[in-house]
Image 1 (cartoon, rainbow, N blue to C red):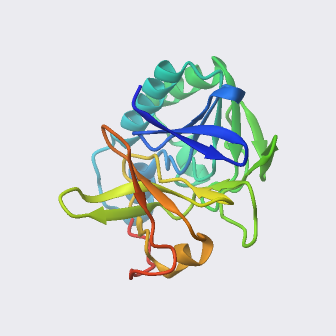
Image 2 (image 1 turned 60 degrees about the vertical axis):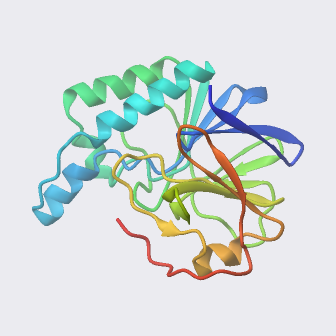
Length: 228
């Protein structure tokens, strides 16, 4: 399994190349911003047709991470669906695949701004969730400590590697990359993210082999608009 161990608030979390986090001590896999059903939502609201394969690709990645880690529980950090209607609009095959993953283990849904409530699927639903020294919510709260969140879809560009989804972290918080196949992103150096991440800080770039690099929390430039 390709992963990078990160000491955080007295715990050890393993950042996977997919953008997921594994917390072995709690037998927990953590993912954020799956945005399942995005192509259906775009077709429904905008009339634009995209290849409807992103849900299947995301679920296949999730199943692979579960097989690799053996995690007995999953925590989804919000925006698991592109909207609540997208959850109902999953095709029968994708819905059956998702339900099979949920029913095989413990499952926690943290609500996001795209899916602010239960989506009619098994599992436990939370506005936010605290486990041991860590708090899980969708959008980072200023001043929080021991917090894991998503929402911003951070990406970082490196010479020779292109722009890549990344995990950002300092001593107080982690901001996960988007896990979904069709999700866009926000430059990791955008003011919104620099304001949240202290110093020293680091980014873990996703990919076949996760790459740890220093994060310029108080410098650099970027425009803050997420690209979807």
